[in-house]
Length: 367
Image 1 (tube, one colour):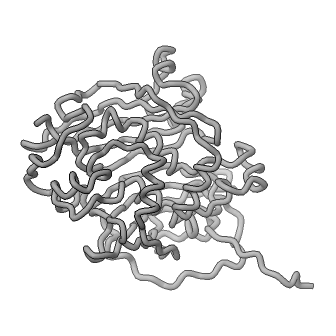
Image 2 (cartoon, rainbow, N blue to C red; image 1 turned 180 degrees about the horizontal axis):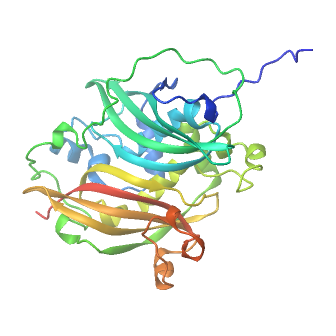
Image 3 (cartoon, rainbow, N blue to C red; image 1 turned 120 degrees about the vertical axis):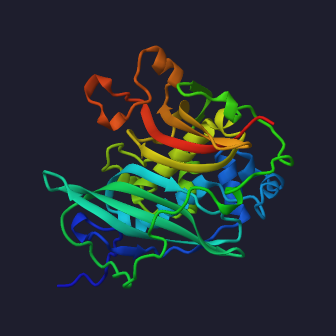
């Protein structure tokens, strides 16, 4: 006897991924000033080009660009519908790039290409590797504004019921790796109209420097759920308490893209006040989860500094986030805070560490 109803589910189980498959995600969202104001109200970011239209226009942009971490959150969230709504965990951020500017009024779409599928030894799960391309369409035409790879741990076990099959789609013309800087920053820069504000010019950083950013931020229940919806992340572990009770935290887990944005923001006044563009992120992971009520802290270690010419240079940081304990306190106890957490075992692990990534920024020199 039939039940007389359907229960559609989304995402894919491990067996349903095929290397080379392209999934055009159904979300289509026009970015408006209200959404950007909500992001700015949550991510206390000091980077002037994403905050000030005057500063952005002095660099050659037609307006202030959408912050890259807002774009990454849209791209991640759009892909959940097809890629990770049945996933157990997000494992890695790989080669995140922002090759063109996006502006308020642009309309965003995304697609993901499956790069790899690797079952685990016990067969109950496996790792899926995808590349997601986020495109914007607006007054500046169609262009790629964010591209990244990620790995997710996905359940095995059969076919997801009643999911409409996606239309057959040829590979994206932007499937190849894009550049790291928008064309406005590709040549010589005239920074005379770009006033300085915060400290932290290119000359102020040296390899090996460690900065423990002093101020933390406590995650609120309503904020993390509202932003999860704003970015269109549809995994129920982030907003459905009965579902989340069956997970590792026994409550709703904060969406990782938000943790990423908040940790970067906590580092911002010390490292981003003279950044001209985020050239990319790589080797990122969430070693532990975050729930409402946790307090986040950040620390940065300078990995390298490369002089790019008269006006600026690139600085690569190892950015890490901790929960409920300041990084300085962990370092004072001898914690190995900046090495890859997921490769550690036993007592070497830093249990309070919730985020790690390499961040490369284009930083102006002192005038």
